[in-house]
Length: 135
Image 1 (tube, one colour):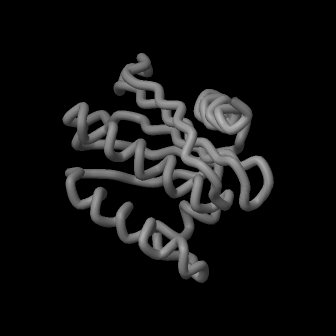
Image 2 (cartoon, helix red, strand yellow):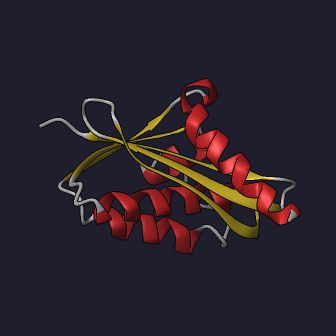
């Protein structure tokens, strides 16, 4: 079965600082299904990355997606979620557990680290969301 693609990215102006998330969801043929650009207030860069992923998973579940490949340019998150790295930041642990819980609602899900250049749409949406702090 072909999987849907979820691209997520978090952006932070300063660390911590005004933060935003960007999410792009595509069907197995590569057509755009959903875009999200959301300002999330002040956050750290890693927390913003987790929030982007959480929002991406929630939006995918709202679309009744059960098979997904997640693409992120945060190697740290991919390695934490796949169990290769421990979560050291106490602020990240609740976000990690929320991701793990959301994953139980998928039949199949995998996580992939990609270069930032391959995540430009989600990156742009996240960066645009940080501009809400300037309004």
